[in-house]
Image (spheres, one colour):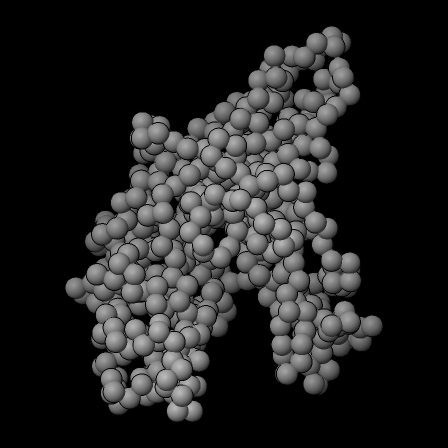
Length: 495
């Protein structure tokens, strides 16, 4: 099936023939369905904190002195933000102005309200009455070139000293919620290879002002998706898809490929938040408060995990069939905090239970904020029955629900705090806690032909499916994503 040239291409990406053949099996056989017990809800999988509890956990975080870093997936292209404008330009060029959707009419009526308007209006040839020309200047290379930029570099918010991009807003948020006592703030952005230089240029332009303003040293890092996480594209009959010149086609494996980037971080706590989920600085209060609450609760949970791990490792077992109180205590903790139940085991097999509980404790931990459902597309919190009969809490994407409808009450905004080291301070191998059977297949086109693409297990769903997980209800005020350009006109983003 593969030529000598194919094998060179595969090898150049850091992949092996075995890797590619495994991908082909997924195309042919599909992915096994999950055994979903139901959505996690308050009182059954989702934890709700009183104001007193919130303040206590925020206080734990404020008093903590460990290392920390903010991890921001930022490779998403802004082209999706402007899809309606692409269509509108086609309609305007063809003279079908009457068919413009209401959102596009509002876009032009409120054009001056956007944070990027001063940049747009300052361009040579700008004429607000020339709608096609305005869209050309906004989207094309001879203008602002927003159709090419990543979302993280689009001006979102107005400030007296000029507009601010999501990249810059994340720096401010990190300074106010995730800086260390040594006056250091670490932020890591994952970006596409083609946009790496632009991000670096903006950072160099921004650095002096932001460090002087907050009195912090910012340690800002960038990484790109590894080519070894690319996946082979196939035809409709599951044969390798080839370009006209016969070369194989590989595609990025989705945000699940960022597990390798996350693995490279070596701090005690990692906060993860999407690039487009930002608010102007004046509205950061709830975001900062709940970042501290989630982090404080994670610190408390982790300390208990470490204590139990050490006790179980040094536990002296007897020949008695009676259950040791420590085992009952640990099992109760896992179920109460992480929603983990243990499988039915042979009566009296105390050693098997001890080993199982120890293996459950020795996992990465994440505390995930969950907001009430609002109709936004995306995943949510669920309870899953594992193959061994145990149960766990997991984040599932809509495609993993196999078309079934669930009365979910909460939504995953991707706002979490993670711990990725064991009780001895050794980083976990994150790949061992991913479920490779939770990827999915999507349909695309290339050169006018249909192809099938393989998406790796998503970073916060399948990629973290074997982590110890806590879901915490957080208010909608912490979730303000920008999916389309019109979202920038919401009061949360528009001064």
